[in-house]
Image (cartoon, rainbow, N blue to C red; front, side):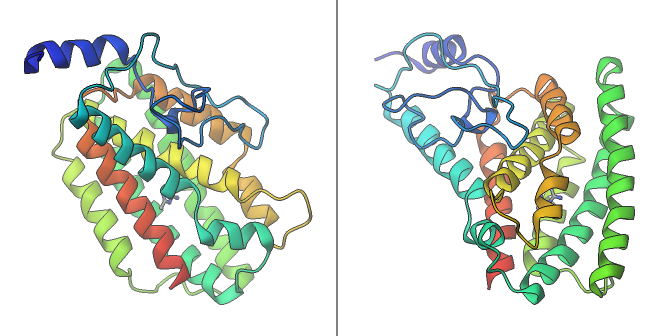
Length: 255
Ligand code: HMH
């Protein structure tokens, strides 16, 4: 049996940065990431990037395999959801969609607060990407206001429990080391991009404008740039936390 240090070293060695399904590796069936969604292309047709393990994964170590299996399932759950299926099929009701949109506007407000703080403590090479993200979030808030006015949504709604809980996680991340916090940011943006890519439809959907907005090449490029800053190794628990909150956020939309 390898000891913990050997195990950690071997995981490190065969796990290049960001090799989870959500990173978008070309993952083949039969590999540990069998349930991944990463063999898809995003809406812009770009191959979802991620490096596959270059050496066999030490799947003989049950705890590692279990953790990775759980994360795999969470990546899938966070990016394939009945809410998104209903958006794709055009069967989501306006009231359900509008309720979700109002909550997402609140989340984006929290995200801007978190990201501005992250920018303030980011290392010099990460500043441009994170600052660009802050500007994009401000524009996103403007865009929410336009959509809300158009759809008659009151953006002053109180936050629902899933929104509050996600905001609290972002608040806790203010106290986390920079690397952990930027990794969480990448996960939440990556998963959002993949989720909306799953809602894309070949036919005209009443929600097509929203799908296009959240799968735009500019957004995909930003997510890739964040991926260069993220370090997945050692952050399994945090990644799982973020993914769980994403799932809960979609769940909130369909109840
Ligand atoms: C729930 N996750 C959720 N909402 C968003 N707008 C994003 C991620 C990306 O900004």
